[in-house]
Every structure is written in C-alpha cells, then in structure tokens.
Image 1 (cartoon, helix red, strand yellow):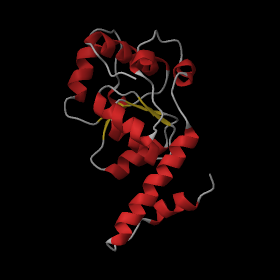
Image 2 (cartoon, rainbow, N blue to C red; image 1 turned 45 degrees about the vertical axis):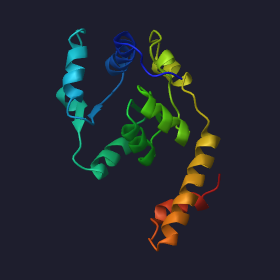
Image 3 (cartoon, rainbow, N blue to C red; image 1 turned 90 degrees about the vertical axis):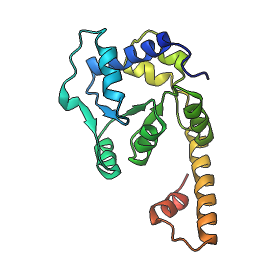
Length: 173
C-alpha cells in the first residue's frame, strides 16, 4: 500500500469523492482549517455545487460521534475521521494519503482502500466498497489486544477504566 505520490493521484480520489457526493447523501466533515479551501480548489474543476448543509464542522467529539452514528458509511482520509466512524459504530474505511496514516491503519487493522484502488475510474459505491481491504476478525482481535494492554497499564497506576471498553472485552467474538 502506497500513499498518494502526486497531485494527479489526489485528483483521482477527489474525483471518487465527488462522484459519491453527486449520487449519494454525502457530507464532508472539516477536520482541519484548510480542508474547506482545499476542497473549494478541487471543486473549481467541477460544475458540482456543494450545498452548505452538506459541509459539517464539529466543535466537540460528542456531536461528531452522534452525527456519524446516523450515517450508513464513513469514508475518511484522516485517522481521526476513521476512528470517529469506528467509535460511532458506523461501518468505516480509511483511504491513507500519507505514511503516518498508513502505519496507523496497519497497526490497528482498520479497513482501508489503497490509493491505487481509490484512483480507479469510479463505477459505483458498491464497487468501491468491494475494493476495501478488510479483515474484521483481525480488526476485532487486534482491538481487544490493545484494550487488554490499555486496561493493564492503567490498572497498574490505579486509573479507572471506561466500562464501555470492558464491555468490548466481554462481548462475544
């Protein structure tokens, strides 16, 4: 898996996002101050009109997670967006755009769409989702290992664990 190597590759996956937006009820969630200006620059190459109500910015995590919990799917190019989708309980995949994101996706076994596949000519949402690299058993085993380690480390220093994390450990596989 390689991150985007050139502006043309970024153009390819932005085109995919624009197709998703055109044919589905897609929302863009701003995570950095420059997200909107970058998007506007890409959008200038298109005749598509982005409705203001489809551009979201959240001032706190709780509102972000609540919003995502009503979504059918989260597609993110950022690790925090992917983790927010997962935390909200919504099916999520990440498109790693740099090595940092790639390493985190690999370390956490998060479903991902490689840049090579994200830049293929867009056919449909179902085709795009079918290209996602995913191993849900590995993701769940990995998640539980990380939680066990988290519980162990915090338990050693007497920090109380969020009961929701303990529920994950007690849930059937």
